[in-house]
Image: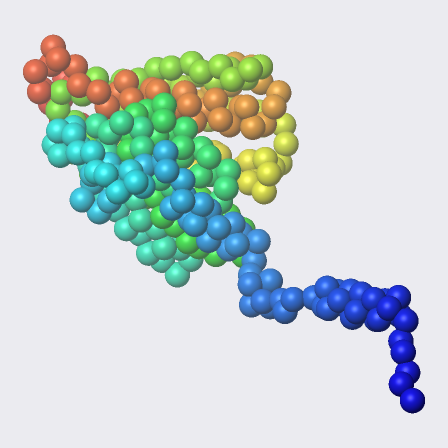
Length: 277
């Protein structure tokens, strides 16, 4: 005697089995899940940078190399003023390469998203090639990484500028960003000094502690031998205030580092020397 099963019941049985299969969750990679947020950002950012075609980076020889594999080398890069620094402590591992005579290549990964954004402003508006790689104890906070990146950038600038023959030495720029207006004046005098007057209304921009802005510039000033005045003329939005500061600083530094053709290679000082004191 044969038993027949209604087609409707067979269909229901198959459907329920398929549903149960679809509901099975894939295995979770626990090691990835346990990574700190900042570490995930850092690794994902580096992957994204390697996949983004318009963005250029500096290879170890200082050439500007695009991600499509074609290298574009200019005389400015070959004979450019380049400073390269590696700073390693128990807290951070930082490498910086700056070409003062660059074209605005921005290639920075510090594991601090907002700081990367500000370093992009330095490159873009100063027309410097800025290559920064940094890892640090950001599981504690961003303080040490922020500081050591700035110290390394200042040292790289010091190397790149050398005896400072023929440069303008002074730079002055006021940058607006919507409601914010920031004035920056600097002197590549060899004497470290910072006069900082920003009123940033919030404690953080994203995850970035806004107190670190002053500390960044103080660290950079200390190693570069720069006199730097930063003054807020207007502004209410914290992001706008800080970004306008980096833009104004980039333009002022660009002015100061460019050559004055009338100097004909002489040092812009009545003393005849510009060294970090």
